[in-house]
Length: 171
Image (cartoon, rainbow, N blue to C red; front, side, top):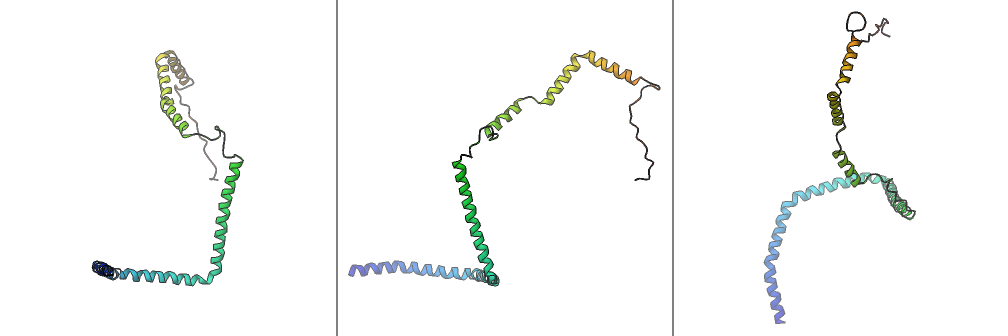
């Protein structure tokens, strides 16, 4: 019994200073946080006041709460039932052609487009080859355009479209 009393005495003298240090820290934290505790108390009181005012509509709370629960249960059950039915009837799997493009096919098409030549550049190259190689066609065009301009009286004429003047009163 003497050993037990000695052990409790040692534990008491070790724990006593720790206990009072923790008590002092708790006392200081209570003093520091007192304004925040009062502010929290007033905020909770304001919320309680609003809920007390809405307490008149208790039947609406019950109605909307039950409606929400019924909607959640119904929506969840429909989701799982429709998923189960589609998996049983194998409606998930579409043929490869109907699934659309995959990421790999999209990247391959993009790479092909990048590797292909620009169509505008191809047209310009064809136009340059036409101008360089077929001078006869160019001369024929120049002769044709000059002969067209020289027709009629008064030398070269420009093709213009004359607009009709409006003689109405604006209506």
